[in-house]
Length: 242
Image (cartoon, rainbow, N blue to C red; front, side):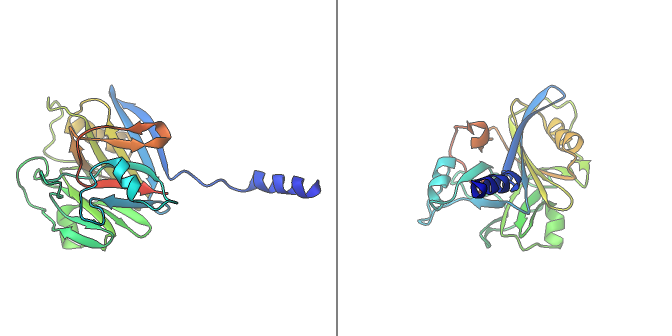
């Protein structure tokens, strides 16, 4: 009996493992957002594009099927812009292997609305880095994806955003803390413009760096809140594995 009571007491004070991803619903200036926060130092953040036969994965459920039996996809989101054949538009690194080069200069579409940026996952941290700064001081990213435009750069909004823009879409993005420990993924649940979206990262989440990932095709997978958004095939997918 004493042994059982001792075991119960031990279990009562033994710390429970923290969830890898914590998702909440937030509202800012009348717009609705789903916010999923990850401890970059403790979580296994990855990028997924192709399976072992070089076929595009394209969907969250297919990514889960590629994992080992003991692993679970606890979070995922579309991870950057892609060509019609699903190849990433810009810089892309998966498990240390680079397959696309960096494109930091101005060009067509949202991607070319510079400055754009790179989401880079390294040992113990993850960072959103403006593309020109990344070009000047490259990082050894285990996983990386480039997208654009940057939303927040060193605490300042992208200079080309217009506060009263009528261009509103469902959008998703990622922001990181200055020390690289906090990664926050956000998906708007109604149409927002770039200025509104960027101010949510800066003014509500208090993140100094944030990057736009995509719009219109924005999708979220978060089993903890019963989310598995349907939609078209995707290119790169950002996921957290437990």
